[in-house]
Length: 174
Ligand SMILES: [Cu+2]
Image 1 (tube, rainbow, N blue to C red):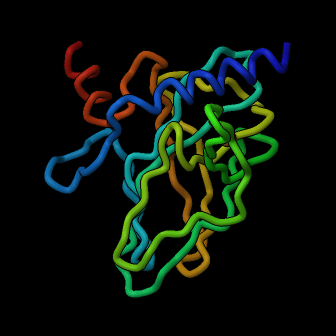
Image 2 (tube, rainbow, N blue to C red; image 1 turned 90 degrees about the vertical axis):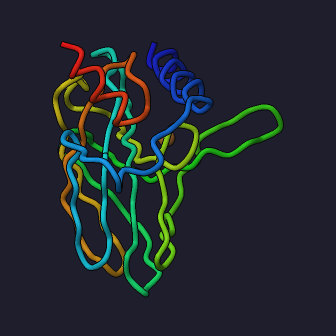
């Protein structure tokens, strides 16, 4: 049962990889997104996806900008919603894509990086609470240079697109 749920969750992540992903928010007001900046590192549009209450794992995605001259790297993450939080990447093995744990995720000097379905993500393992659309979850990121950053992750509905623009369109339609 646990394996089945994990597989379903992985399948959902893999399937969304082909969808267009959020790219740039600089030019438009992003009212829903939480923006956190510290020591040249800026984290925008952190999001997760709602999952059935029985799902043992979830994932958090975000866009990270490094406005400093120093290359930085994400070295760990922690959330009170999960017993274990890991940094993950997806790798291709032949036709199969699978998740692997990574020690760090590099953010180049004056560069940017998007954690997204099918790519890097923060894995929330052994969830203490279900991920419910419209709610948020707290996440503490640890960067090598920028240090610790507390961010808020928006939980989106499972049928929402992967972009924050889509998320907002969904809301404005009400
Ligand atoms: Cu993962």
